[in-house]
Length: 509
Image 1: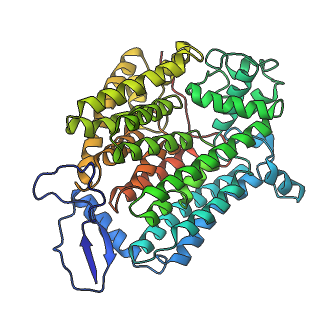
Image 2: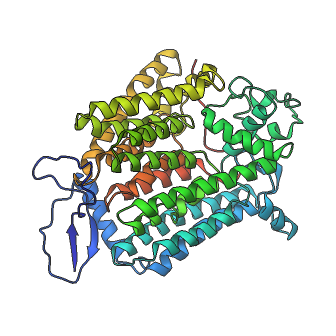
Image 3: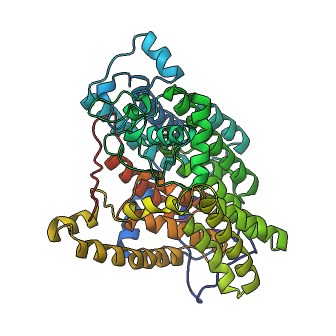
């Protein structure tokens, strides 16, 4: 018998208030005992009701069992890894850096075939679909009673991460840009003023600098848009790699893999439902592909973000507020989207009128971020963000607006003023769909970061890291299915096996 039930309260700290009669999103759970609660209405209207019917059918299919679910997930990650092992041809790699990491080098020596672009892309898209399906099936199996030992799941995922960090990153050239910025800093230049094409020997149609040669042609003329903490990470990797960019990229891959596992360990120790938490993060095949195999800095952002969120939930003393402020400030020193974490932490403090805590955390976070920028590379480090904020990715609704009305300054201004309130409106809608029993700071941060990847003019699948790490702390809810769909869709649109990506840079004057 199936019963739709509200998730039980998870934490007495930081609960949200809700109007009488409101209900939380629900999951389908098998129970043998007679129902104890009446079925609440499903929020979301006809779309959510239709999705619920589909989910109910799939969750009772033979695939929604532990073994098939794990096999599908492994096949998804394995398919992407296979493309990485075959990525040995420099001409293949506009989206994938043509570097031979240890396992890729071994695979080439063993005679792995060169995959033509259509075949590589077909494998990539099928693998991403398998990752999404495998994740869904694992969660459905969990909702039907499968409860693996979370520590064993963590260890198994750690083994997978230890393998894939040795494979050429697939589908994104971002890590090559990270390496180039680190090399610029290691040579004593400012990566916020000097671009990869200006590295010694890097200019011209046939660059000889090995770092420049790895950077996508789209980004060779772009200065770093990452914070000084990210630059120091890249600098450390470049110092270790020296004149060997493959070694720098390998060090970065291992750093991001370690950050991914550290985030999973925080979830394992702090989540009310550690099984669900590890399935949604360290054992999530979609995140292994996007964050670990892509080597993206968003993994590091998620680590500091979840540390700040967990500490702000559980501790209220002065010294704890200082640490929270420092953590938020360091997160802002990695990527600018840390602002959503800061806002998520501020919302429950505003609700509770905890003005002293709000002032302490806000002042320390702001001062930390400002100091990181000002006393490292100067405020010139903020300059590239101005250009980045005017970029529109394809396909999005904002690119359609550009195609219809042009890419002039007026359209730029309209887009810039339009998307933030739309994002906040969507965030509010998502926020209200969550149970009032969940901590406000987690619900708010999840809703904000989820809405951002849906509405922002520039969005990529790995930008969903903070949304995933916060949803892993929540009880079962319908946002998980939509976050899977959103991340999977972005992956299919902007992730492939080496052919030029669907990314079309739309700089506006």
